[in-house]
Length: 107
Ligand code: 2BA
Image 1 (cartoon, rainbow, N blue to C red):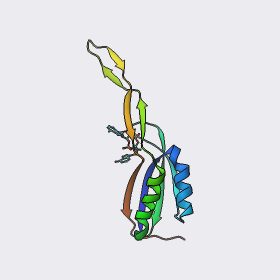
Image 2 (cartoon, rainbow, N blue to C red):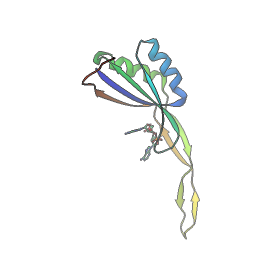
Image 3 (cartoon, rainbow, N blue to C red):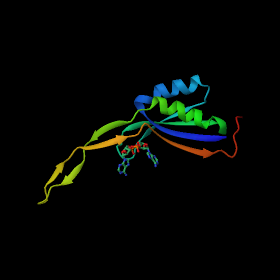
């Protein structure tokens, strides 16, 4: 068994969950916050058989798009003057981690 941890954009999470459930995956959704942008995202926990990992990642990648976000930033402009400089950040379609599950039980 593998645990797939997928951090996805909030805007994509509804479609991803819908498609994962349609393909008979079990999904737990956690509301999370990105440490960099401090914006809400969604973390999905999916525990599945080893041979279904690629199928699961395929479903996620079909639903998650890359986006460009403009975030406020600060930069020193010399002479001690600080100016807010908006920054462009590319946020991935999804960040996915796959880990081994030593034991899986439902009680
Ligand atoms: P955030 O931490 O809010 O990051 C949003 C985007 O900002 C990232 O997109 C990346 O383009 C940029 N970014 C993040 N940290 C940065 C840094 N230290 N320096 C420069 N740019 C930085 P993604 O890489 O697609 O990540 C989207 C979200 O996935 C992240 O939101 C975070 O919640 C999660 N994530 C990404 N990589 C992770 C990792 N290695 N471990 C844990 N969570 C991760």
